[in-house]
Image 1: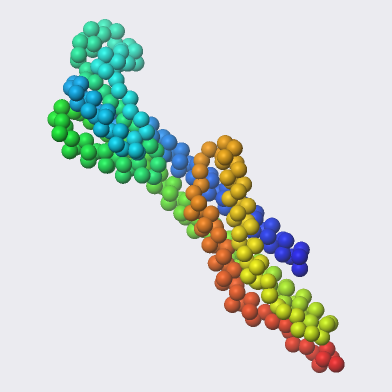
Image 2: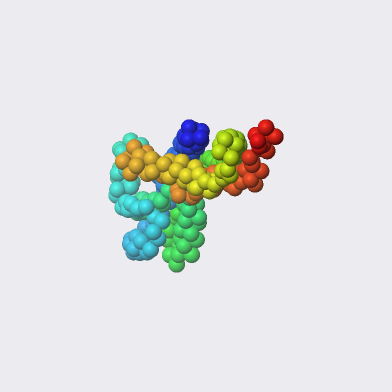
Length: 271
């Protein structure tokens, strides 16, 4: 019985670890896209230095802004001359032809799209809106979030599919184990001529089979992540989903397990 139970635990650990690895691989792709999004800035241009100073101060109220970079007209001109080789236009570009520029980088996360709309709404309602030009790079952001949305759809499909497979495997393996347990205890009862409780450790075994694989997976992940062996994070809700799937399999098995009783003794056994 112990050997069968150990094999059941090992199977559960391997299944949950495998599921966690798949989730990490998908999350790494999603969070990589978020990191890319954080490099797509919103750029504000103005010739009014007071407006620029005011913007830099007021933007500090938004904690979703990763950082801002201010460039004066001279710096912008120098960057353009260096980047595009416009040495012949140096005098024109540095003669206050370009506005000052504020480059705003948002934090790359699931709220970035909503945060960008909040910032856009604030800039659109700014009292000095007429003296500013804003470049939102909407096409780049739209394409980036299309990739994120596609990855999120794939993630939930995988969670549903793998969750269903693990649920069925846990259910069938548990039913097989409990049936085997009932037959073994039937033989014990027959030989001892006394009642032997069947499935008396069902709920204790359920807690061990449910929590051990998930907690082991969680702690292995936490150790690897804390040690910087893994770059991307997996949220606690995912591990709760794993736990619920395994618990659901045991709860489904229980009504069937109650039917696994000792077999009736034959007339020869009763003598």
